Structure formats: C-alpha cells, structure tokens
Length: 115
Length: 116
Image (tube, rainbow over the protein chains, first blue to last red):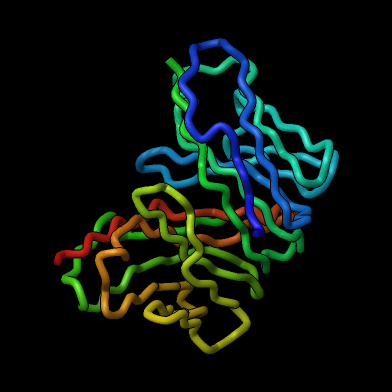
C-alpha cells in the first residue's frame, strides 16, 4: 500500500530536549516536505527536499532541521524544542515535477506538545 | 508569494442538501493544479479533488465537483447530497512555484458542519 508513515504520532516532551520525528514513504517520490498546522493559520511549510542531499527552507524553518540521506526518509529534527513548536506536524511526498502539476500525499500527522 | 483565500471560516448545511465552499487564489502561472483537501476529526489530510488548470472541464468525483473560473482565479467546491461523514475542515491548496518547490500553499480552511 502506498503511504507516508510518520513516527511518533503523539509526543509530549520538555523544553530543550532534542527530538526527531521520522518520515518514510514507499512510493519512490523525489519530493518530500514537512508542514505544521496551527489553529487559524492553516498548514505552513517548514522544509522541503527535492531529492537526496537537496533540502531547502519553507515558510517557517526557524527551530527545525532536516536531512535527506536516503530517498525514502526525511526526518524532522527539533534540536531544542520550545513551547511555540507545539503543533500538529505533517510529512508529505510527491513525484517532483518542478511545475506545480503533481499531487502531494500526506502522512497521518504527528501531535507534538512541548511543555 | 502566492496566496489562497477561503472567505468562509464556517459553513453549515442540512444533510442531503448541497453546499458550496469558496476559494480564490493568486498566481501568474498558466499551467498548474488546484486541490481541495478534507481534514476530518482524525486530522488526516485526505485529497478530495484535483483540477488541472489547462482543462476547461470542471473536475468531478462522485458527489464532489468544482467550479473552476480561471480568469477570476476562483476554485469553489460543491458537495451534493451532503452526508454526516462530510463534516470536516476543508482546505483549498495551490502548488507553490519558483525554484521547483512543488510545495502547497493552503487557505486557512472552512469548517463544514452537517446538520442531521
């Protein structure tokens, strides 16, 4: 089954404790990205990757890191989480076209609470 | 930067009735896709329908259809015969462009309530 898998789905952590949210896709997609969703703000892109070893900032990258060492995996790293990073996070993937003519598939989301 | 505007924060409709959710967007591109995503209480993002801008025919998926007005940059979603399971947040989305980003810009969503 084609899917994007995120882990953990739910996490409560403390300020400053490094954490990683993993993302894996089995569709051989070049393009992967991370979004966060906050009430009243919709979904905003954090980082994206067009292929292995090619990552770039989205709209809200501060406080986050990513890496793309393998095509299927795109982990999101919070080196020193803060309460304003409490949010619902989505990983997404798609075939890369560079044209805006492609469909993006989402993982099920990861609820992160930083206390 | 592209913008996507959903002007209805909340809509309510009686079960079995028809409802239309509005979306406008801003772009200088000529060839692109547009999307409606549904987000039920589970918070999963589910693709409802996709419109290809170069096609004049409006996309249809069962009870879901769009009214795509390219010149007006309008992309509304029509849900016919509304069902209780249609209750959700609905997001209109437009692909970002420039630098091959291929990400999506989302509207802020419309909360759809289905009255039994």
